[in-house]
Length: 148
Image 1 (tube, helix red, strand yellow):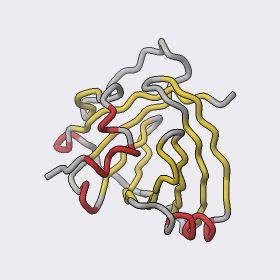
Image 2: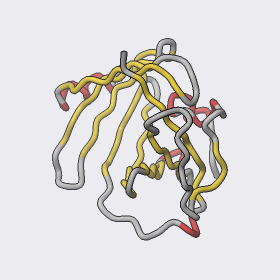
Image 3: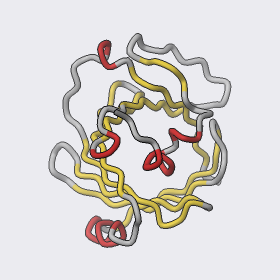
Image 4: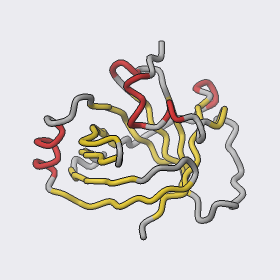
């Protein structure tokens, strides 16, 4: 079974180091229960990928199944989604830093995938409040969150 173990944090923007080489991500949801996500990524080198992801319930640990799909088909499937999130993703060591756009402009989240539930992680100075257990910060719910 596929499994995701992940912690999510707000970011202290003023302490964030200089970022380079982002990925453009568009994602939408075909279903919320179970969570079925379509994602289209344009990488910093211009390459493109599509993904279909199915996620189970949970906060720190949950089932996750992810499949590559044709990037043009991913764009077509995004047209079936009610809400599309757009963000730029930067990689800093093991951290993924997402800077949201559109209605969520100003929101920056950092995620780290863990090897085990009890793994100790040293938090960089730019990592702020943990929001792993706050369901309003799940990507599928972020269209409800208005950050200004």
